[in-house]
Length: 221
Ligand code: GAR
Image (tube, rainbow, N blue to C red; front, side, top):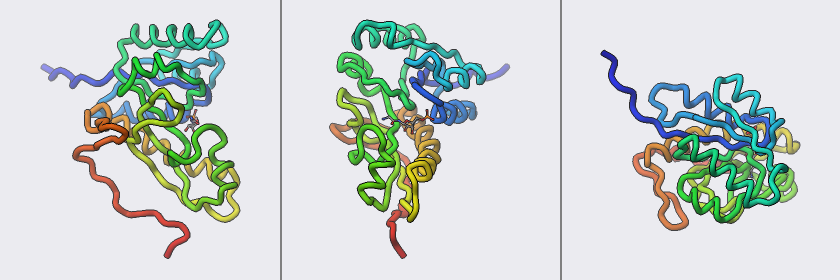
């Protein structure tokens, strides 16, 4: 007789575009022992490339077109209903480019995470790689954080840093960051699903997790 499988957290991924972070989460969730199962992918843009990629990967994919709703509240209510229908425990925003209402973020508080292509609290919002280059920072990166009512603000779970190199374009720098996004998002989701990333005020306390201690300093020896 086979032993019963360990229960995994039911996860929804919300996207608006190509879905490369979604693919990294889907890939990670295939591993035996990964504590999450991706039960649905939802896009506010029915033509999002990521929806087709999710379908091709055999994951239920749903377009909820925000333009079909008169206001943010009614769109968020439809989104909330779809998530509850799918009995979702954790929501991952992965390139979901639509502001959510405080009512929605509060009702998913502690159960919704986001990936942002910058080292928060620097460079909230859009065009992060262009702005990092303009600012002349030497280190850039990405952040996974719990979602709160304010955009790109919320307790930080994990960050990865990359060097900004001479001659970088936003595209080159963005590609270097994206590679790290695909590393930290599955790792952060694992921590959250295993209950090892707990919100303590503005911060996240992480239990029993070995953090690489090598600091990245650029330029450096
Ligand atoms: C990613 O770089 C993600 O960090 C960013 O959008 C991109 C989506 O790419 N998200 C934000 O800017 C949210 N503030 P993907 O669809 O290939 O994952």
